[in-house]
Length: 464
Image (cartoon, rainbow, N blue to C red; front, side):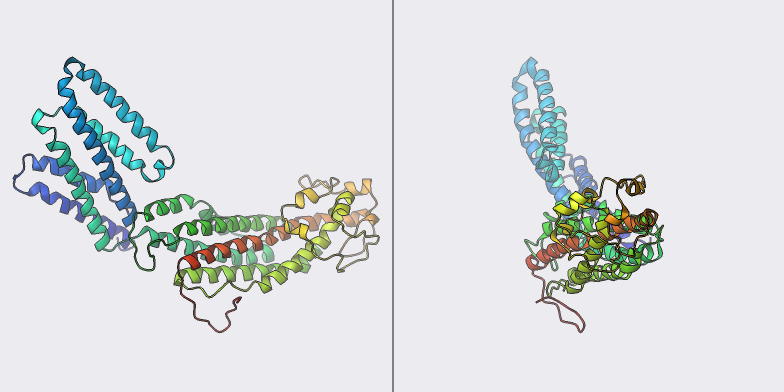
């Protein structure tokens, strides 16, 4: 119990709310059948008590609204059925049928299913109980109204206990969840930098951490649904941009998926050695480190509700341009001649172009998913059939960007080592556009959430 004090406090609050609602049952009987009817207050506490204020209030409002509507309908039915005579059983059967059809239909129909699903369930349940109980004539009005009052009493006990005794808000949980996921992605970028890019080893923690980010959407949707029933509290005012947190999480999930791709492609690339890896491995590590640092800055801004401005991307963009240039230079040997002509790549007639800047990065390389479409059909990467170049064209018609090619065998050895790492490099380049989307989403939260200006610290760099 000491290891999980929040769970203990939640259980104690549930018991306290049930005890408060059960006091009615222990009173003397100034009202007929008060003890029997008071059970509905305790049952309501058991049904609507949830882990947060918003989810409990939302469920309580749903239950009260459904019960109220069902009680009104049942009152009308109980006044009509005594006058039907022999048709009463048939009439009740029809009511039972439609009492299930209509609530069930709207219970699972958008947009009702997101907010009012429980309300329609309670309406169907209460309606069936009230019309089939066979109340006496004098109880047509008393029992439905008494049950509704007891349900409201139980709901009130839950709300009072939840709000005034160690309140747990869905808004706080959602905010902390997004902050923790930001820190987790930053940590995984650094781990991927050290384990995958440099050493070629990686533990399952990268995939586990990123998977937890990818599959937390249900928890976020639950919090967003409950937040609309919560009152303003702390830093969260009425109209706080909670929906923008969904955009932050969406951008974060895209970034986490890219990290997983980097991890898998880097491990495949490091099975062999290549001059490309030797040329850019330090730049890749610096790039991933800087991305992790910026994400930590975003997490700190959300955590402290402060925002000074967009973090400077100058260093990242410089490294990104360098990596793009290396990718373009090393990609040229694998482009089909027709494709190279369409992209206006300069023709290369010699293989002695080591470490030369063949071309500047162009706009087409920004579409990082274009790699598969640019590969020459002579190379079947998935099957590893890289020696077809020998049988189709002379190796002298292609440029080897690292050293002079003396034979097709040398070219094939270079290609076998460089192509996997080239794919890993392109996956690393996918991080920057996703990081821009993440910064934009956090900036929306900061501007609409009225974050205070952050105190400038020595060494912190921001764009003005």
